[in-house]
Amino acid sequence: MEQAQFTDRSTCISCGSSRLSELSSGAFDEGEVGSFLRADPWGEDPMPFLAGRRWTYVQCGDCEQAFHRYILNPQWNERRFSKWMTREAIEAFEASIKTPQKAFEKAARNTAHVLRLEALTREIRTGAVRLLDFGCGHGEFLAMCNLYGFDAVGVDRSSARRSNALVPIFPELSDVSGPFHVVTMFEVLEHLDDPRGMLETLTTLIAPGGVLVLETPDCSGVTGIHSLADYRKIHPLEHINGFTPDSMRRMA
Ligand SMILES: [Zn+2]
Image 1 (tube, rainbow, N blue to C red):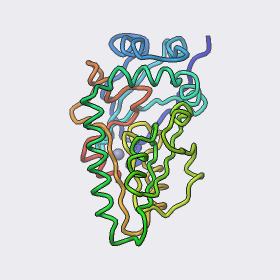
Image 2 (image 1 turned 90 degrees about the vertical axis):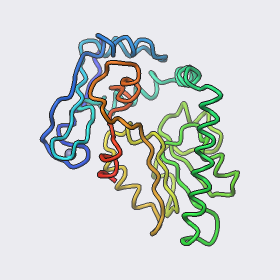
Image 3 (image 1 turned 90 degrees about the horizontal axis):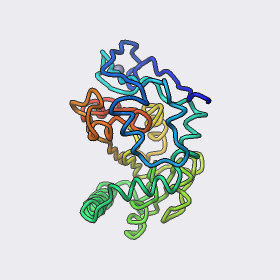
């Protein structure tokens, strides 16, 4: 059986320091992490490829940014997107957490964002709000923006999500052109191999005086994976970067 291959992020993803200390580590196929991974819905089962491989959650000694040091290499990450996280697996996962109450709260939050962004960008535009939602999923937020008359586009890497989208969504950042009055990243930073590099790229697409919206799980106090709540925040295949309000502000 093939083994999944990993890339070693040996320097801090935020400040570049090599002073990293281990917060926790374990095997993918053992303990709580093994049970949680086996319970997640998948297309192709990743467990045989992860047997004997280890995850290591580290923290930077200079800026306190926390992250998973070993991440799937680009080839295996592509396999994760195309074979492990199929459309059916994503739908099964989302169905397990999407209650009417959660859906209401998310839509209410999105409405609040739309109203705030319209007001915040009045002085830098004459026409519609131009908005890019990077990592837009099925495009729920974009659909709402469009209802309010925004000129909104999305980019998402997951072909399963794009094929099931509410609005046209592009696979690559190079498919869209700025400047945008607003760039949003909801629940994206925690997934990126190089979050700082992506922020630097996105910044070049924002009009002067424009707005960047970042939302990511608050991992304050999470140093290991002992509970399902910990796992949801720092899942070693999915949430490879753990932010606190301070560390997110510092990177931005
Ligand atoms: Zn650092």
